[in-house]
Image (cartoon, rainbow, N blue to C red):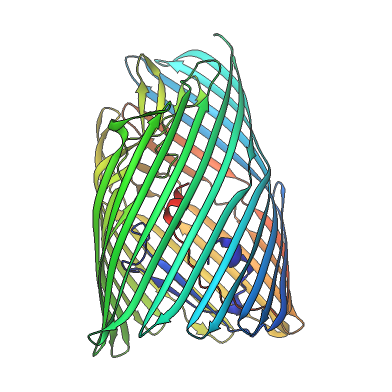
Length: 599
């Protein structure tokens, strides 16, 4: 699967099994912590086939999705295409209280309402050809275009100094984005050479856009401001990867490598000079090589692997190379696991080292103007974080249990500092923290009793974390509990009823305290016709309006408390029709996916 649109097309009857691989091995990018393998029911699909989908979602606004997939299969040739149109509108409300503890205590109480509208169209064409059962090739080209994107934000703020009224601000921000078409091309070969299997992928990616914003800020007691900005971003990527798997010593060894080149321009222009105008460029090259060996055991299988990654990160500002913000990283990421079955219990125990690289917006140096007391930026000095993960999983009948201990080094934190010579203004940014240990325990059960299938899970997430913030040492050790009850009822006459409930408790995550529990109830009813060629599904989402979030964040010399909610209660109707739909035989998995996600 290369995008979530493919997942949208699947119905529950088409899914044969779902497997979560928590230690996917060295052949995957070091940023990949787990892999979800979805096996579908085999469909023949020779000749012409198609699948159509139309979705309507009504909340406080209306959203639409229209999608058509076509496929032609003859002998070893598959030719396929897709077109999809999305129209979405999102509402967001925030009550934000922010206090800066400087020589003067600055307090803001802000009321914010934003409305985002977007329309986009996505297309795909491609083919794959099986010369025989041992050799195949394929090409896929994706083209996306944001037809319209705009956001309107209304902002009212009450400002106090040392508890006394200072000002009342009202601002309106109008932002819209002009995007060039987004291109992604994948080419692959998969074949058997001797006793081994060779796979090769090559990818090209290009995306560029410009976001314009106009912020009109009216002050009751001080000067008014008009702030404009143009943010121009251009992303390019080229990547390739190769893997060869061969039998060895009664097991199998996989060796391979991956190369990714990215080039990103991020220019930010503020004509009025309230924040600096910057022209930045990031050029990054990633070389990776790996070896993964697996061997059967009397009770299961053992795996051991090693991945080496060399990253050359070059940073340019205003056309000049900046050595102090450029980096070279050389890292080794080992992994090992043992899996098997003892009696009726299946198990897996494994260790893996992974990394999380900052996304490119977190590395930016430009400053976004929110209001005269709040700015936002990135941090070009951010280092990638490294995670050491020890996980044990057990399965008995329909019960599952998982325990995972993680130690994250150079964890990336959401942070804030006061602007030099403007202590009333908080600059929101990101920093590395030395380490963050955490423990996750999960229990799950998925019994089927007659027409009822239950998927229930309970998760406890506990961290041990403290740091100095807002003038004192603060501890974030309270656990977070997450539970879900997903029910499916197979009814007569082709009806399928679903009722899903999820709950998240108060708790602490990184340096954020979640002060309000969240809960969601979704109900759906699906009816199939024409031997499941046609289906209609109605859903009601967030019936209890329990998705409000309240969070408290402490930074270097400030605190921020945010109560936010959006238009999550909705009713949706989806109609699907499929004719001779074929399961994809395309074997390209893509190269450079981690870098594309960071863009």
